[in-house]
Image 1: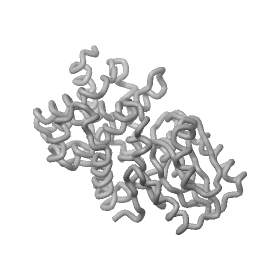
Image 2 (image 1 turned 90 degrees about the horizontal axis):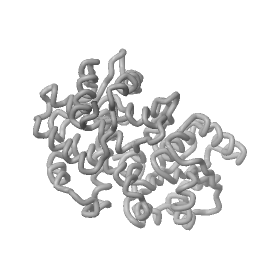
Image 3 (image 1 turned 135 degrees about the vertical axis):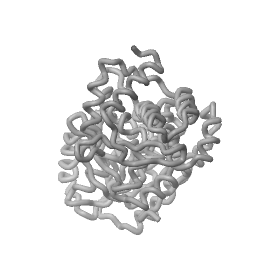
Image 4 (image 1 turned 60 degrees about the vertical axis):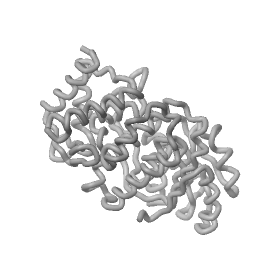
Length: 350
């Protein structure tokens, strides 16, 4: 079992006052961004005692050390002590950055994750991985630190745009591919996202991630399974973040899963029919990333600096068949270039 409770459902926040009564914090502070301050904060505020609100600009581009510095200064101005409680209300950026800020302020104050997007509810809010981007590299600085609790209130999803819904759905696809063959066979029959039971979908992903994290909290072995699609995917996400039309996390990871499934097939770990099924399912929902030939070196350069690498090797998680995985697979330059070339050929990009 994880060391903290995870509450899931439309009324999950009803459990928050009980947690606050038990913790008896010296102060309560809510961190949110400008979007969730308007759309989600009013619902949360009804469950809170007197508190302070800190708001930052939305978007991955603000998940930086500069933003952290601003927040640390505000927390210092508020004279928060080590018994203060930070409530992180928002998507993955708020959860990652807010948790990092809490874990480092005065060597750590307690925090609670209250994810408001499907992506943060099925993935980022669970597991205690916290961090910020640095010099163009995603999650380059960070720590492991567990929250006091996670409140996954699905009420917040009612107004979520389809594109953001799909960004989270990519992580649920990943969870099926690495750990649930039977569930994948059911999932791949899905054609309309409105057919999904969102509570069941979230519970499924949270259970898979929790089971893996319990075995390997510090990501030294099995937890690396959760990186499937992320070696190529993070490179794509980071590269396009600096362009006029960036991709969402899920869109980049969807492309990353196709690329890493292809490498798995090339190594004889994945049947060609399984690769085709994975690609066909992802193609139903996600846009093609325009990985033209001139983008190759930029993507390779980002992969070489990926935080998962060791001893100068680009490390990746591959599928050892659907429902199974291989961690710490060292990718050769030839394999990386071959996968990118195959992707371009598949989508007629050259």
